[in-house]
Length: 394
Image 1 (cartoon, helix red, strand yellow):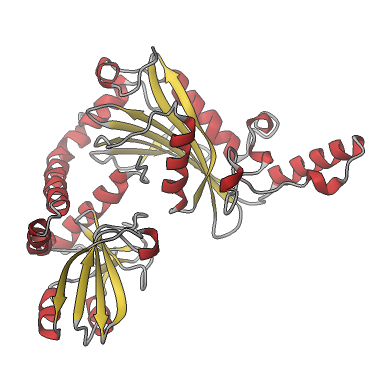
Image 2: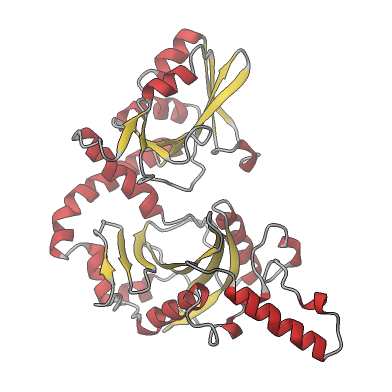
């Protein structure tokens, strides 16, 4: 089960910014890093294109797709790649990419470029965000060669993304009028609130901010393959752990919920912030054979952090002392909420349990759960969703 961070953001933002690049509107958004990149790879004499992304350690089963040998051939391959990096990480994508271009000099790996969604390059060795390519057709030849080597999926992804880009351009007018498919679906499902402040809508994504500055999104995506039934708790949680850990998110809870007869995946994750504290994400995934609806809420700690943990620690310590047990046995510990085999690196603590939400209603985790529950309680399943839902209560 593949659970990416909102694919709409990963694809639509780079496409939109690529259009800005073509129009020459780059000064405020991008800087041209091509000279820096070309100096970095000067003298490269070998390229290996492989499956998987960056880092390679995350893709132990990667396969070599094709090789380019000799300085002249390598230079001809790399020369057309103009890289523009975002000044404010406007197009940052959290995926590892696939495939990856490994660049060597004198048999030593210089760096790796991960191709992301056929519209951008990730260069994590040098920049934390992806580089948008002003001319996406430069990968056409590479995609043809990879298809000839038995890897047609990249050519197919490019074709699919181009169709999505065309739809994106066509849908701009519909979005302005409030008549785009995603806007119609949101209304049909009774999603939304007049109290939310909307961001600029996109073909596959509606995004809002509420009075608490929490971000709420409604996304319409292509259907996934190999989706695991949310009722299979062990398998679905295992898949969720693996998918979100790559983005620094760790499991707080995951279980199936039901709206009408439609089975939906509910997920809450926890991620460290750079400036202390945590960010909490609540997700709701509605799987159908035609598409997938994703609703998410992001709530983050601000100001004084750690209050929830401190209060629960004090309560637990007092309970332990009253029971005549050592206080240290009551200290909060980070662990996986469901399986001790996954405790390493986990961020969940007993203070994240739902029983503490009522007493700490303003905490971001409590808000994330409460607001997602409110959305769920008012959500309507359309006839199309009911007809095509992958998982139905019987």
